Amino acid sequence: MAKVTLPAPSVISSSPRIKDISNFCCSQSFPPIMASNMKEKLFNLVVSNVVSNAVNVGLRLNLFKVLAQISSKDAPILPSELAKAAGCKERYIREWCNCLSCGGILEVNEQEKFWIAEENIEDLTNDTFELVTNGMMITLIQPLDKLVSCFKEDGPYGLDYCEFTEFQSFMSQLSKALHEKHVVPDMLPAVGNGIVEKLEAGGIRGLDVGCGNGFHSSLLAEQYPKASFVGLDIGEEAIKIAKQRTKKSGELFNNLEFVECDAGNMPATWTDSFDLVLIFDACHDQCRPDLCIQEIHRVLKPGAVFAMVEVTGTSNVFTDRQSMGPLAALMYGCSMFHCLPVGSNRPDALCMGAMWGQRRAVELLNKCGFEYVQVVETPYFPINIMYLAVKN
Ligand SMILES: C[S@@+](CC[C@H](N)C(=O)[O-])C[C@H]1O[C@@H](n2cnc3c(N)ncnc32)[C@H](O)[C@@H]1O
Image (cartoon, rainbow, N blue to C red; front, top):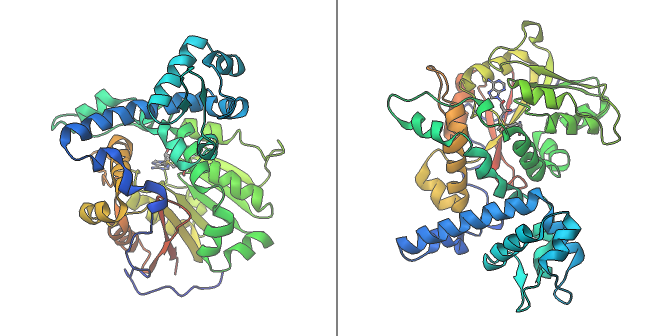
């Protein structure tokens, strides 16, 4: 692989400005934060929480898509009709419609008939980041009692991944919503170093570290059949599900394998063997991300690229709040409920958390062998930034 020239050590090549995320977070109209007094804020938080969970129920039962198909402003329907079409009980569906119409998600008329406003159909029937994340909190608060005890001085260090039984399926749904449309056309060209041409020509080997249940690895293996890919994850269940992945046609992959392994201790035989190593949102929540990065440095061929897609942030909560608005609250919360406790779960853990940000990420990459780090903005990934580094 040809050598790449990247900026001087520790330099963040693009300014640490955070991308314009106004499309994603509507910071000017976010009710809990914008309310004028604390009582109003607190009340709005409770309402948002309830409505958000009701949205998630609708997602799980496919109610938005069914409602969009069988109703409109000119032809609103009774809950009984939605219940019948969705295979549900009328009484439950009626309460769901009542809650979501009062919560500003569905429309209702005086005859207590319901529909989705034309302008909201797209947002409520496509698996976008904004819709899918309504399923996040129920997934993350599963071990809430234990999390609370982790806060205490004499409590446990953290939580184990397996205490979040729905996490992997939620995460792959989220990754699909966030990344599916942009990994191939936008992100890989931004990796540069001729990587797209090399993947297309084939004969090269890519590694996806912390692959979860294999969403990105299988996307790449399908797109680049002449290249081969390895997905690595510490989670037994994640790898079991990943191994069941097939091509969209149902055919088995012949260029993709999954390995259950600690990223901080990869096989000895992998030294200097990968042409590309990728991470998607899977460094900050490791207990020892330093060992993982050192291992990545070892397994890359000299001159090969490491592309780490991670949660964006400035490493300073004050500037994160200013530049990211409510998205910062979402990501610090996500970190508090999940990323921090799973990344703190041993006595020698680095306890990074999702909002470790550019300064800490670049420092760690530098410390672990990657002298030159380029930070690339990824405006097509609403919560991410990409770090690029080449093994000398
Ligand atoms: C937030 S998930 C991201 C999963 C996947 N990359 C995605 O974006 O859908 C982080 C993943 O890192 C994995 N992980 C955590 N610590 C690890 C370690 N020490 N070695 C390998 N994988 C690890 C977890 O099991 C989890 O699947």
